[in-house]
Length: 194
Image 1 (cartoon, rainbow, N blue to C red):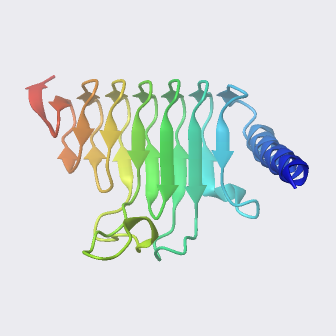
Image 2 (cartoon, rainbow, N blue to C red):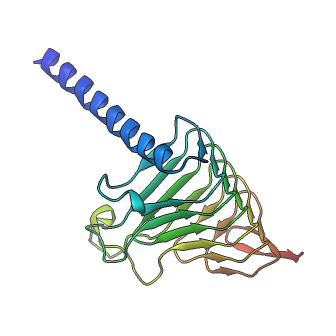
């Protein structure tokens, strides 16, 4: 019995690797100027490659996960990932564009190990959170043009960062960050205007 379980585990792992390879290959074939490390996981519905839009000369570094699901059993809001021209995504970034749109503007950079989440689950007493529906009162994350998001930040559902803004490393951003300002902290607050 142990041998059967071992063989099954090997085949499950091989299938997962093959699916990841195919999804990655499709993204690279569609976006010829994309510079993405082979370790990047592109997670989207096979029938909906349009769930991910990528501009020209986008760079995605090693060990990132880019998830974009247009439909979800947890809610009705469509998910999508939009990376405009010249965006740079650093090592280990995790973007979860399900239940809302994540948009990163032209020439913006996302620092190492940042997490961007388009929607969260509702939290209700006595209901298992992981299986609860999306809280669709706040969805999506919008990052303007020429924005720098430092390493290890968390951008939560509903946040909007204006053009030419800077988010200090280790910050948690919720709500609105006006254009041309530096914000930092947990939760992020205005540090100074540029």
